[in-house]
Length: 386
Image (cartoon, rainbow, N blue to C red; front, side, top):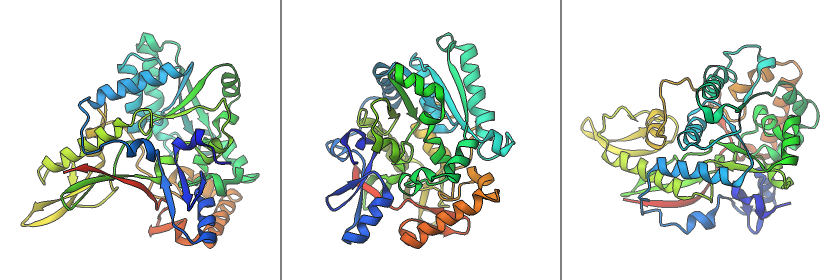
């Protein structure tokens, strides 16, 4: 049942019908023959003048966000993959002098059996070593709980039994690791106990602004449906009083973070020379782009991964090992062991094919061999000005 309490993590609408499930929205669209719309806190972000750059620095905003979360909850669990987003969130807490109670990382230790696999390498080379150094070297974090959550058995259960109605709860990232990872409150007995005794929050380093586009002299930004990929549909529908989640960046509680990020990207794109190392004439991920005069003609210049994260994250370290961005949202490299399993592989592929048969490219688009995505919808477009 749709409820306003969890709608701040995003939802879809078809006509007057609202749902947290993208697949349910696709079914309703087929019946009503009306377009799907994606919404992410339209009322909050729509009330802001995006053309005005906030005077506060991003560092100060991140500090305030860390303090804001600490003030609301008794026990903070930060999901730390070791990627740039969660690393910056962690550093915001640390440098603001704000305590986190637990750092948790997801792995496939048992199923993969290799610490260097696509899923595991970032955990063992980046997130766990950083967490342990923090506990050893920072007195504020001497009691830090460091938890590695092995999803192997739980993923088998999700795929073998009823998939937890993955058809409706999968949304833009239906890969098995995402589905089993979202069940952590039911998977970890300690979490059940903690949530019954304290106000526990699970914090995700999600999501920085990107897709800043230049068009006819103005810069624009719109929320992509992947913004809603971390807190799963099941959590939104259950709306249990003990379930508390926070996106560190994408939140109606600190909406100016995205406005400031957008202006930081815009300012760079406007002023950077065409040969700046953070710009590329080869399109990769759509972090942002602008036409610039180069080699005697106008050419589109794309913001690179290093460029984006260097602009919006004060503590970004390009030398730190980070798992490459997932190119295939349906068959993620993180789940290679699943696809190679004689039972689970065919089961998952059969389910994917059933979704393609039912919804076609409205559900999955094959961009090129080995690369497929399920994200098609953007929310309201906001103008960042000239």
